[in-house]
Length: 143
Image (cartoon, rainbow, N blue to C red):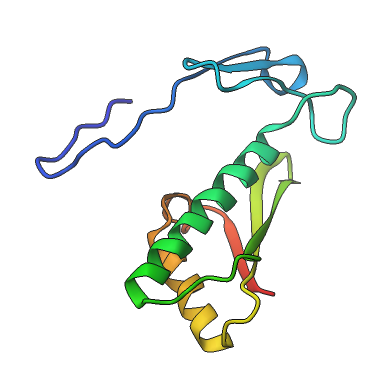
């Protein structure tokens, strides 16, 4: 499948990762050498990570960036203790696999209404949130 860029679109970055062996005994390496890791089945034997953990790490990092972007626009100072705990479930129903996710966002010291506005704005702008919207069940909790 090929996508075509629009006239006003600008590619900011392209990640290149080569994976062999899949989730059971795989290896994933990025073209720049920053990622070189083993893959393992979730909960199974092996010392590697799994795609669900990688997805959770990527989404939570991106979401934190989106919160920062929202905070700058709203002129809100973020707490240094801000944290996101991402939970990604690999599920199966009737032989079909699917994902479900929760982002548990901690913004200590901010008024609840301000924190909620930041989280809601981030969920609208984060590329991972956009990619999953309507595709998987997502819950965002302000903790």
